[in-house]
Length: 164
Image (cartoon, rainbow, N blue to C red):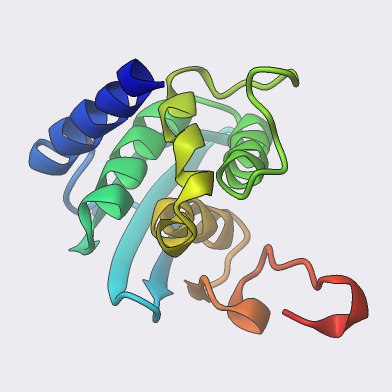
């Protein structure tokens, strides 16, 4: 447990200090703005889709280390992938971060992204980790903006009884 926590911290720090695919993408075919009103994270994500695959991707914005590291690893993971595989990763990451996917017991395609599996134990940080993924989902589905908050969250699933 201590080793996985240390690896998580090292990965977060590395990707926060040197985010991959940071910046703008002038020839983007899809874009979205993502916001986490709870902590103030804001991301702009730009994607170039060619032949139904993520050819290029870039992000920038103001966010905490977890959000920036998640965005950095996400962009690396989806670059070059078909849209369907990118969407699959979006759903699997969200399920892992919210505790619906046990990466040690259930099949998945997350690879190195499982370093974020412990975020499910940090409820106040889950939305930080999933904001980039929500923003990618929004961009790929031609939604200009997205949020991690209930009805504004395009991936929100109402809980039984209608409580968000």
